[in-house]
Length: 143
Image (cartoon, helix red, strand yellow):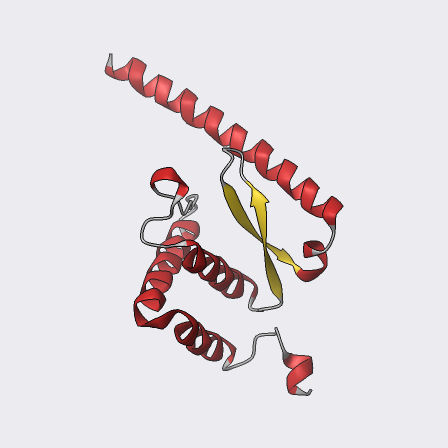
């Protein structure tokens, strides 16, 4: 198999090469921030917990938009073992833009991206309703 055919597929040194190129792109401080965020996310997901990368005003704590994209790309590599995904910008439920990791063929399919946006919106609204209901129960128990 040629290097071109192997592109995007995990091999024995695939993750090492990916991480080296990540460090070169973002520098030592950015690399440490992205690795810490990805590590924390993997621990949360492995424990069956949701993981949301967000801070005040939608800005992820300590991660600017470039590092957020690198974080998402790294998670996709860790989860799939491949790097042939694409990051696409999507409008968020709250009006703030967000990012989604998709397979390359989806990135160029407007109908598929619209459907993805609708699915994300439905899940986000359901999550917000659940959070409000839990908060209401918490307030009742304390009062």
